[in-house]
Image (cartoon, rainbow, N blue to C red; front, side, top):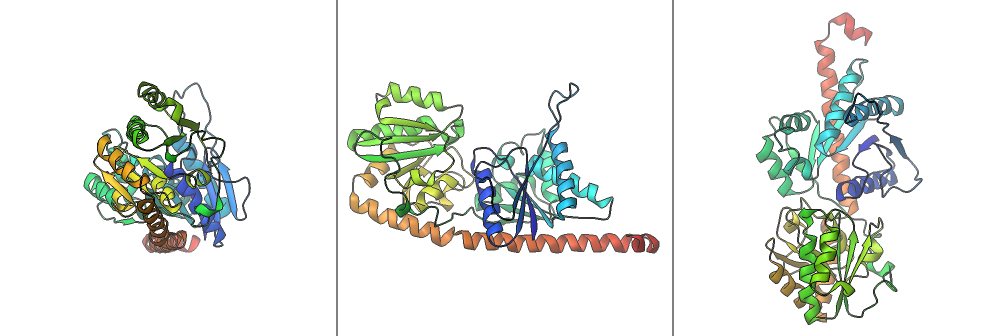
Length: 396
């Protein structure tokens, strides 16, 4: 198949997953075309059967806010026609699925068509999509997609509850990991020289937005380090980084907290960690937690959103209610202070990630979804042909 993929190319779980999906599909013989405003951050400079098409947003004095969605629709239309794409796979309902619908309507003018698959990741449904300004267009874009997927059962329920999805169904296809990339044994000593103090390594990776509760990460660590020698490694950047740094100073642990900034290849770092912290207000899935588990790193997290679908409480990590800093700290201490408990959880984490979220399994689900979407598009074309006057149908 020839598949166009549109995602947000910057730092974040949805862009990472969409890029890894494209790379995996290309490895299975499909032709992949990324259509977005910048090269996805996890996309290497060159891969066989992988192409990148930049969306150029014109800058005109008339537009205070340049219309990216329209520029994207035009670029999608161009790439579908020039590369003869079979499927447009949009990650996030708005504006990506909206732009895909516009592109498909433009294609109809020349008798062409393309299947549209939309994957919902979270904030497009839980925050942006439920804003009254965007609710109607989000619902419309979802329902006009040929197939809709969500990355967790939690997000599937949220979508149905918020939008109803009349005449459509939302299939759950979880995020995935490449077991080779997230093999702990591949990366000995990745943090050597970065972590000066001895002891356990606790880690957090995110975009440092308020929903990630990075200040809670520091508070949890401040309790852990009183019981167990440890270092906290914070990977990423964002608006709450300053707050987390200030909290570390206030709690007297700043010398044991390392802020590494944005790093695209996180597998070597995770492979050097002993525990991952994810106390988020909400996560539609929790891709960073899955990547940690795959590296054999137990996770202490909040029991919010789709996180319980990833972490098995007491087996691969520990779940506590949002804001329960004391409970998360106690769970973290219990895991990292007992080598036997840690080893058991580490083995279970790596095995569970590979069994339930393997690349092979998930990519197969997406391929089946593409086939379903192509069947829907074919049926639509057939119905349109039947509705045409005989002379027009022959001309097409």
